[in-house]
Image 1 (cartoon, helix red, strand yellow):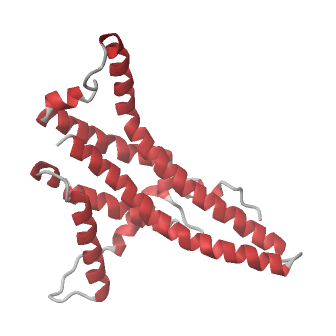
Image 2: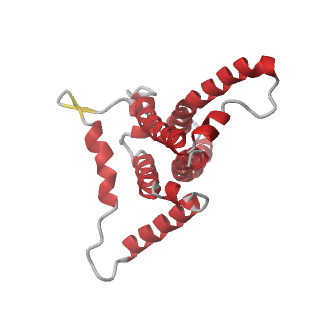
Length: 226
C-alpha cells in the first residue's frame, strides 16, 4: 500500500481547498427534522435516544444548568456522528484533529467557569483553596488548583483525540497485517481478520462512548458552577 500510516488523519483537500467544513456538516443530514404527524422508526429511535441521553445528563442539574440541555445534546450528537463518520472506508474523522477538539472544549469550559463566577462567586473562588489548608501551603495550593483548572479543557480535547486516533491506528495496522498475511498464511490471516472485525465493533462502541464522556465531563463542569 502506498498510503502512509497517518494518511487517514490528514486534512482532506479538493482542488487545493480544505473541505473539512463540508465533512463536519455532513452528519447533520442523519438527523432530519420531523415534518409528519406520525414519525417513522428512524426518527422515533433518534428521539428516544436523545431524550434518554438528555435525562441522564441533566438529571443532577439545577434549573439554571438545565438551560444548557440543548447545547449539551447537540454537542453529544455532533461528536457521536463525526466519530461514526470516521468508521466509513476512505473517510475523514474530524475529531482526530486536536485543534478542533480544543476549539470545542475551551468555549464550553470557559462558559461553565464564567457562569460559576457569575452565579456562585464565593464558591468558585473557594474551589481554589481546600478547606483546612495550612497557612504556609496556601500560595502553592492556589497555584496548583489554578493550573488544574486551566488544564481541564486541554484534558478534554486530548482524551477525545487520543482515544479516537489510537483506535483508528490499531485498525489500520491490523488491516495491513491481514493483507500481508493472506499471501503467506491464510489461517493466520483469518485470525487477524477476526480480530479486526471484533475491533471494528468495539470502535463503534468507543465512538459513542467517547462522545458521551466528553459531553458528561462538560456537564459535570457545568454542575460544579451552577
